[in-house]
Image 1 (tube, helix red, strand yellow):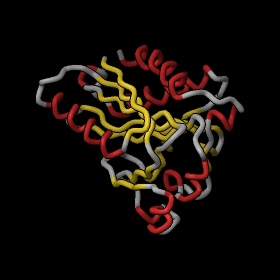
Image 2 (cartoon, helix red, strand yellow; image 1 turned 180 degrees about the vertical axis):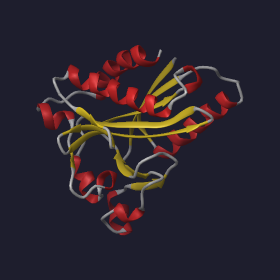
Image 3 (cartoon, rainbow, N blue to C red; image 1 turned 135 degrees about the horizontal axis):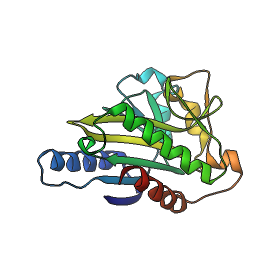
Image 4 (cartoon, rainbow, N blue to C red; image 1 turned 90 degrees about the vertical axis):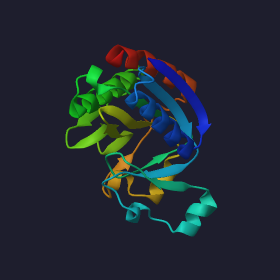
Length: 208
């Protein structure tokens, strides 16, 4: 398992890195599993089930705020990536982890529930809506993809995120639900490094 952390990484650069690793794995030039833990500049990503209409502000305002958006090949609709988040991109060969996308998704959700439990946050999964929830507020969005059973994309966990970014979209396509963060729930500011290191140990237990 190779684990790498990147701060202030451009989203397009992360996509290219994921694609390069996946290509190497498909071509059998790299048999390692990866976990990339990233903090991005502000960006909206729109999954296969999403639509640009879930962006609620005009293009001019996006440019003023310096927010880019991308249509990407993951499940789900629109979400935000940016400062104050832990973004996780596991790149795993599911031939070695059950060859079952639903099992993988559930395991990823369980790993995040265990992480949040460390901070005394009692969150939950909702079967019909992937991600991690506290009531009607989502604290972690999950959108995955796979190519020849090799996983791509992953999750976005709000640590100290400026939640105003979510007010410019319908998060995950919802108009009647909100978002929250570790800071919002605990009043404590945890660093990217702290949360990333805590998650690495949990992730290893689930996927190593």
